[in-house]
Length: 572
Ligand code: ATP
Ligand code: MG
Figure 1: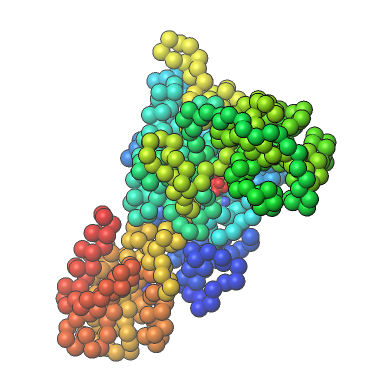
Figure 2: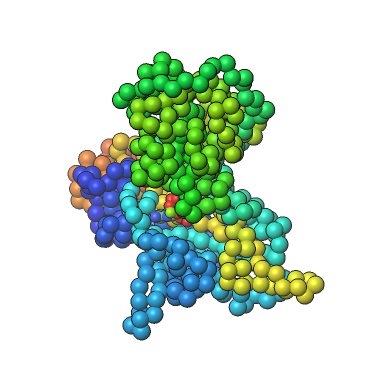
């Protein structure tokens, strides 16, 4: 491709609304342009990376035995009503009516459509296992679209759905996808971890998220410093071995704590560490039950663990009116003593004695509080947020570390949730009808390219790894008006094309400074500069974008050497 015949509108300035580096660089390098909030056009230069990402996914999915199809964006409400998600999905689901007033939505994911296809075409266990995937545009009316392609409203996703006769088959399909995902992200040259993720309250299901390590990541992750364990903080388990409740030594005492509203303030006032306090949260479940939750003073509630424990969709902190009604005091003074509602305590609290709690009255606390003697807990469970330094739940000597990540892929064992709701069954070898056991597997195509830029850039621009870079080689003519330079550049350009190398020829009549700035910004992995001085000696200059390494190549060998470097980088 010749630069002068291409559309590559680079920007000097960083767009004001671009908060993260990948968004800034994709805008500045002319890869994307915003059309509306969370809706982007893929410009020619950006589309090349997107297509490469798709191709890597396609190859690895095919290798794993999945079969490509393409499903419609417009989904009839009917199917979504069958699964129950028409009511459940909420505002992220973009709904519309056609001219006959029939309800539709734009697919945010495609379990319904694919389950409908499979129930109509697959009747026997002999047609299984089956794994169908597509690479397609999704729409989710995200409440806060941001970070460019990272969290768009319209975005390209690869979604796959596996169908098996039994759990064993489904687990094997899951395992294959897990491995395919590892291959995909490895081929992209990304630093990533597969982490155990929350899979909601659906019994028996499990899931992993594939996380690209990046400071700008929206997800908090913990991993063990000694073993392979890694999990989303939402899910990270904490295991307490043999907790014993210490004997009570203190008397229960009511104390005035005037104006002390926060845990820190109360701890300071009582002259104890926040870890000697037990905080009481009044929460309300999505089933409208109100409960008290106890945590060590310096811990945070993990609402997802609690919701899973209670087998409800959600738990939220109760509103002030509910807190007043249950405790007799405004928010901030709740305590377990004398409460009439169910009390659930984090397991860690079971190992505490002689602690302080709220007094269910303004400016009142109790000290010297003890379990059993002073109040009853109906259940102890792991419901707090894991923090760095916590013991690993898998191995005996590891400690958890925390970091941030970008979720680029998700593998999920669905079980029979959709097949039962939509009556997708097959006959087994005994002629008995059985619901299909499903799995679903997503990868955000644009998000992965953005994540790759988050990991591969410097202050001058991006440095995408070879497998995702829009072009492999940039040939830069220092001065296109110089006949010798033009001739040498054109010759190398032609040789590279003949060798199948993806090459961009910067044939613009621009100052070298501008060309080099653009080259650094767009970050094509290998840059060959054809300039007068080196050319006189029969040489051209190679610069590796990522490392900054420079070297001279004899003009005659340049094309072959570049091809060799490209192939080596692709197969790394
Ligand atoms: P998130 O928690 O980030 O909203 P999700 O759990 O909703 O993600 P899935 O439904 O599992 O995501 O979708 C599969 C993949 O699609 C994700 O792993 C991610 O890479 C991508 N994805 C999801 N939402 C978006 C979005 N708004 N913009 C771009 N990619 C997305
Ligand atoms: Mg989401």
